[in-house]
Amino acid sequence: MKTYKVFWTGGAALDLEEIIDYISKDRISSAISIYKIIKSKCFLLKNNPERYRIVPELQVLRVTNYREIVYSPYRIVYKLADSEVYIIAVVDSRRDFETVIFNRILRGGPSR
Image 1 (cartoon, rainbow, N blue to C red):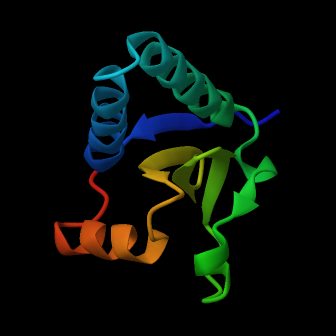
Image 2: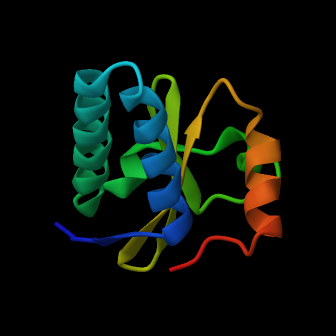
């Protein structure tokens, strides 16, 4: 079985930090739990990143190397590149995805 290396971009790490900071203001135990779950789901990408769905908003544009894990209400967006997986965003699905990604591109795109 092929093994992938999983990398967090600076933008994705910042996304997760902001989500956890926001949740921890009211529910520290929930914040810790969500952090652990998101990190563990990303860790599983090392074995089979193709098992998750292609990002629907990008699939329409025929961009198929971006996939996502949905852990409601969060979308963990990642890019497949050869034997590497880059976590590029952790987005609250209640926000407009296109606006979030557009703003990410404006501030410099996903960094490695």
